[in-house]
Each structure stands twice: as structure tokens, then as C-alpha cells.
Image 1 (cartoon, rainbow, N blue to C red):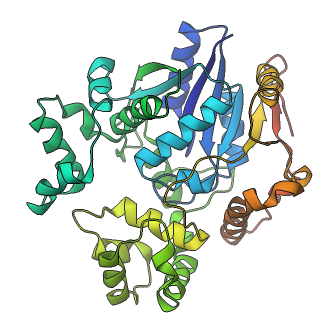
Image 2: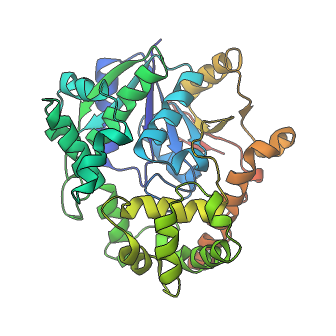
Length: 379
């Protein structure tokens, strides 16, 4: 049985994700699909709009067999770090293949870009010309005679980093490219037959569409994020946080009186420090993440089907990482889960303030079990 991995956020799970899973199943009908999914915080440097267990439930309903959580310290990284952490976890989960979506289906060109390593000194001349980091990378690719047009879109960028991670980490994993359908990654068109996750998030927050499930908006963390920033600037602990730049610290000190995060970031971002990089940095300040790069130190199962349960049994006999199905039974490794425990407390507080209802604590929640033959969720 093939174990096909997907690195995802499902923030939220939508028709495009379902299309990708259906495409995989049509080509590999006997495979098990294993998703590594961000938990309470996402790679964009945002709090997830839906609770991770609800997103895992939707993924299982959409055809995924096993959902494992990518820790916050792994999610809150650049595309390169995010990809390497995700690929590393898929390896521990026994995946033989990785499937990913991209705007283009030219795997050969994506591989050629992934086989080209980029050092800081390679793009330094272009940054000095005033180019943004993405533009400098594009110019570097062009200088080597490579077709860099595919590197411009977010999904293609991640696809390249997945392929690069497989090569650098020397992991035997076969790539499966699924051409993305529907609206673009940054589209806000909610009327598209396949709206983007961003469009759905914006429509939920604005009230354009409704949801029976409670959700959290990124702005719900503005107050605590700005407080943690001011504290980090006051005691200089900001200098130990992932994503630190002296130039950025100086700008943040000058603009620290802003009352909302978006205005603050807009005022301090630059061509070489992007909006999303600053958002991730602020999340790392909030959570106290200091490592320059993170890899998973444990496997946390959020949900599974019967086929996924077989995968878990197989994983436990082969991985060197502790496998957590219930936090209450994982007290011996609380030092490994501390950052994610804190991330959940922040999420739980924001959820309760917005929705005026209590979110069940993580330590009381077992994995979601989904039985396709009967279609109920058991949790």
C-alpha cells in the first residue's frame, strides 16, 4: 500500500483540497493518504481560522486517512523551513510519495529550480539594487538561464521547496504534482466555483458567509501580540527570537505605539523583509520561539480512518519519535509539547472571546475516528 503524504494547512478545507485528494485517489486507489497539517498557527504567521480538530475532521471527511499535526515552531518558518519540517515528518510517518498542488504541471522545470541552491551572496547584488527578496531570487534564476516564471506563485514556491527538501534531506520520496484548479492563492473572489482559502476566511470574518462552527479571526490576537512585542522590546528578548533583524528591531521600536498589527507591519515592512516574514516574527515573539530552524520532535495524531489506524500501527514500530494520540497520556514529554500547549491556550482564549463558548482543552480530546462505511465521526 502506497502511503501518500500531503503537507497542508486546510485553513479552511475547501473544494480545491477535495479535488486534489480525489485526483490522487483516482490514480492510486489503494493508497493511504496522510496529511501533515499545521495546528493552531499557520505558515503565513496567522492563527488558524478553525480549530485544528475541526479542520482534521473536514480533511477526513474529504478523503484523508490520517491527520498528524505540524507543530507551531515548524509551521512558523519560511517556505524553506516549513517544507523541510513537513517532509521530515512525512518521512517519519512512512510516506513513500508526496503530493502537492501547483499552478503549473511542469514537474521538470520545478525540479530544475529545486536543484539550484540559493546562497545569500547569490542574491545580494540584486537586493542592493533595491529589489524585493522574491524579485532578487527571480533575477538570480534568470542569470542561470532557468525558466523562473513558475517560481512567482506561492503554491509553486512551496512545490519547489518540497522538491528541494527531498534532495537536501536525502529522502526517498516520489513527488506527485496535481495542477491547482479554481481561484488563485491570493484571490478574494468568494463567488468562484473553487474559491481560495483566503477568500473563504475573508468572507467568514466579514459575515458575507456564515458558519455553524465557531472561528477565530487573525485580528483577535492584536492586543496580546502588541503587548508581547512591547515586552520583548523592553527587555531586549526580541534579539533571541526567530526572524530577528537589527534593522527590523529599530523600526519596530519607532512604530511600537500602533494599536493594530496590520498597520504596524505595513509601516515597517521593506523590500528584503516581507509582510509575512514580519507576521511570523511577531507570532514567534508571542510564543517565545527562539530556534532558527525547527524539525518535528514528536508525532501528534489528530484523526484517522480504519486505513489510517493501520498506518499508525506501522509507524509506531518504525519511527524514533514519540507518537501522541492523547495529550493526557503524554506527560513524560511535556517539554516537547510546551510551545504547542501555549499556542493552544492562546487559541482557546481567542475562540472563547469571539464565540462566547468554551473550546474543549486539548488534553481532553482524543483523536477523531472516521468510519467511511458508516459515515459517523466518533470522538
